[in-house]
Length: 97
Image 1 (tube, helix red, strand yellow):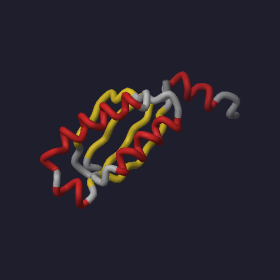
Image 2 (cartoon, helix red, strand yellow):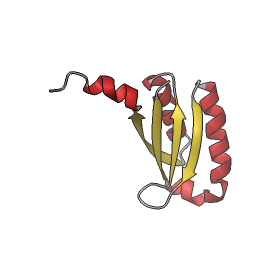
Image 3 (cartoon, one colour):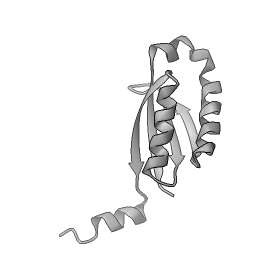
Image 4 (tube, helix red, strand yellow):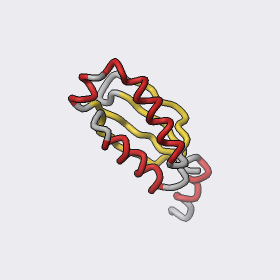
């Protein structure tokens, strides 16, 4: 199952309700399960992003569905990145000079 990193930035609404951020993470995990996505970890960060999530999804559509749902809640904007294992990367670079 492919792995994805979701990078989150709080919106103004999300900052105003910052005290509920861990409750929102629980809701995110529950919704992910409904989309057949497994949340490995949610972490809050310092720097250009406010939080990240590492998730396993059956495909790009499921990962995107979760990110769109999360954005529709109004508390965050997200950036989703597909990750590759070493074995997957070997296939990607196969045949390169």
